[in-house]
Image (cartoon, rainbow, N blue to C red; front, side, top):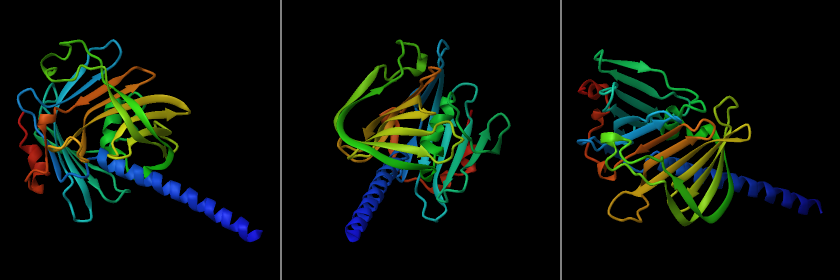
Length: 302
């Protein structure tokens, strides 16, 4: 009887460990897809009025529109650097401002941020942004695509099911975005139909954070994270919707990148959307890693 009980206990422990390992494996693959780790580099350069467009809007306030370029490199094998990312603002009062972000393999090491200030013609080091805050959609976006480390959360697979998912977009009136509105999606939503989805709960390990946990809806084939719901003190506080596209000629390619990212704060109504024209996305280009240097920032023209 004691042997049977021991076997049952060991079996239960094994099942729990296996479930935890599976959840972590799913979350890791999804994290890598969301951070475009499958690509050597991604180059998104502005051409005429076609560029990355980021729009943020509070209720009753005119949208804030920013044109952006992005250049990401994951091509490092020195055992130190994980990726480098250059962001250049190409519109408004901050036109010409550039940021070089370096991520390290060591999860305990802070990201390095170097900012080019065009008015001063100087590069300055800036501190890594901390807790985004419930209403700080812009920093929440940065955290979602860049700042959050994989080991900052623990993961639980809640269920696996075939389901439809409605992915929302920011609603606009025609012409509301002015000269940057050309090509920007004006749909209210798109639908993902009958996909096998992993529903994963990611719990933030530290207590003092702007969310306690989030629920993600992850494609079982592509590991694309379609939708994420954030919770604080048991209350639903924010949603993020990601729209994905294939890279290459094959529409069924497993290589995916999100081209539209939308979030909404459920308390304040604050919204943010970032749109990347598919024709601007270039991957695995023959670019030397020397490009990802402060020298490149200093060459930015206003």
